[in-house]
Length: 104
Image (cartoon, rainbow, N blue to C red; front, side, top):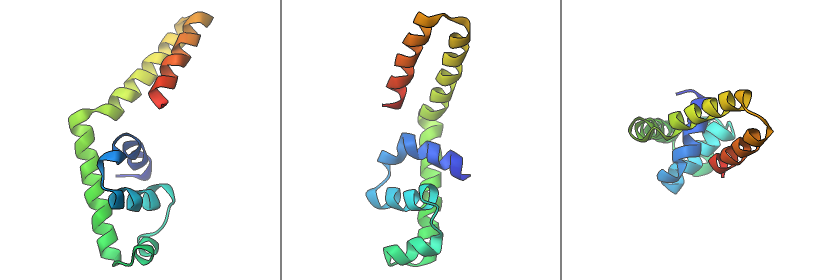
């Protein structure tokens, strides 16, 4: 899983990970720490961090496969943009409100 995909899935499913898993993934994917740096901070081996990251990748991918929250979000955003191109100012204002609810 690449970092962009992982960050997107973390946005949607990060709360379903344990606190420790979420922290490690945040360090690795969002803060761009190396596995070695995270291992030193957590006081564990590099391979333990590697295993945790890979386990989280599998879990996040499984959540998306079952729930489709991120792919549905992407589809809605594309549709909002199509509507915006077809609509007027009042429609654009309503779309802005829809998009705001998506990111809350």
